Length: 377
Image (cartoon, rainbow, N blue to C red):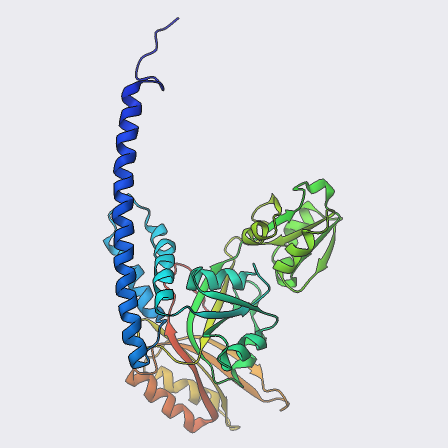
């Protein structure tokens, strides 16, 4: 028999070395904690200054600057893609010492909108589930919530028209955007696909998984429900059922995973908006959203869009919607690069008013720095 070489698992030198490294880790953790408390003290000081001067507590552009700066400073081996989620929670905890934010979202708990809100505000915010998009707007308008989170579009299913329509009658402004990659899992109490007799999910989720279901579970009954989270809740009390929902919903409702990533298109993203009562300052990488209705004359839409082209302003999205209560009349939603405080944007909007029945600015907010950007639907 060949003689073994090298250190054995029971070698005392190895145990001593591991103990020594763990001691250094404990010391590093202590230093990190001390720095976190120092940061918390500074955040509390900023909170006192903001209270005395009625300043905004949540400035998404400032947070994105922090993440960008830390990304550029990171030399490893700590993973760069872990910086944002780690510091998101640090910022959330520190901000709660300034003011604990109340965030309304399209519920119930464990929906993708809930996940998007947690991604944006961290777990230290107080999240309140609302039954409808209009309820989210109403809670923020009444001051019962500081901010709201609502879906606006999906990369495969298109725009959420109810959210667009709400902006026509609301004085709230868009403060930030969130882009969330959507991954659907098939979940059940047993985790046994052979026991699945029916599947619950939201219509959009079912549409995004249509081919997978046809190929893998062609004879199983599919039932539409109000949300993917509601589907998970129903599957949690029905041993013969499964839900198409998020991994977070599975954890929340104690379900087992039958299959992961059952969506047909793997590059599936949903964009959400953060709505509030005040517009944030210019960040230098902003999007401005507006809605307008043009006067009834030939070439008016061409002229309206020409105000932006003439000033070299990039329009990243245009969407038309019927004006409710007025047959064959439309409003146009536009997104452009820039902030309303910039002279070119302000000038174009002033010129636009001459061609329109009304022009309404929905908000200027930091553009998400993601590899995947929406080109419009």
